[in-house]
Image 1 (tube, helix red, strand yellow):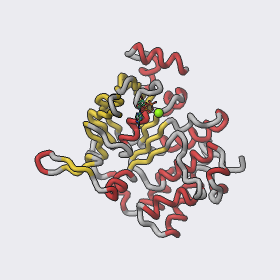
Image 2: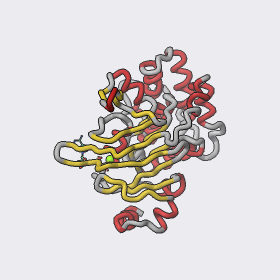
Image 3: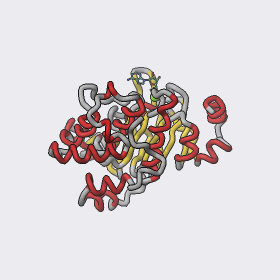
Length: 289
Ligand code: ADP
Ligand code: MG
C-alpha cells in the first residue's frame, strides 16, 4: 500500500487542529461553550418495527471525549440504536439529545411535539457523524467527491473551499494519493477511511461507528482501527458498536452490553471484561474473545 501509514504516530498534528483551522474557524469557541453535561444522550428510547420491540427503553449519556464501546449479540438492537441516535430513524418514545437539545422534533406549547422539516433534520443530522459497516459511499463519486459532498450540499461551502478541506482530511486518514479513485477502485479499508473522512469534515460533535471493521478482510481491520484510535486520542467523542474486544479494552472509556433491546451493562473496560455483573455479558465475552 503506497498510502501514508496511519496510527503509528506519523499523524503528527491533532485532528482537532485541522478541524479548528480548516473547518471551524471562529465557531471553535462556541462549540465548547454550551456546558451541557452530555454531548449525546438517549433518554428512555423505545423503537418497534411492527410487533417487534427492538429498543426497550435505552438510556445512556456520552460525555465530551468519551469513547463508548457497545457490544452485544446480533439482533440485540445495536444498529437500530445508532440509527436512532443519528436521526436516521424516528424514535417511538423517548428522546435523543445533543448538547442538551432535543433532536428530531420541534417542541411546542404544552409539551406537544411536531416533526421537523427535512431541511432542519438534515442540519441536525450533520452534527452527528455516522460510519456504517458497509461504508455507504456514492459509487459514482471519487473519494474526494464523496468527502466534499456534505460540505457543499449541507454546509453551503464553495467547491474550492470544500475541495481544500476534503483533501486535507483525506491526507489525515492516509489517503491523499487516492483522492481521485472511485470506491470500486479502493480496498475495503480505504473505503472505510474515506467514509470516516467524509463524516469528519462536517466537524461532528460526536462520531457513531456501526461495526466499522466487520465487513473488512482481517488484514485491513488494523488500518481502520488505527484511524479511530487516533481520533479517540485527539479527544473525539465516539460511540462504537464493535466486536473488536482489543479495541474496546484499549480505547473505550466505558463498555456497554446490549441484549434484547436493552443496555444490561455499562462499565469501565476493566470491570466489563474482568468482572462483568451479568451472566449474559460473561457468556458473550467468552464467545467472542
Ligand atoms: P444488531 O445491530 O444488534 O444486530 P439490529 O438493530 O440490526 O440489531 O436489529 C434488531 C432487531 O430489529 C432485529 O430483530 C431486526 O430483524 C429488527 N429490525 C432492524 N431493522 C428493521 C427494519 N427496518 N424493519 C424491521 N425490522 C427491523
Ligand atoms: Mg447491527
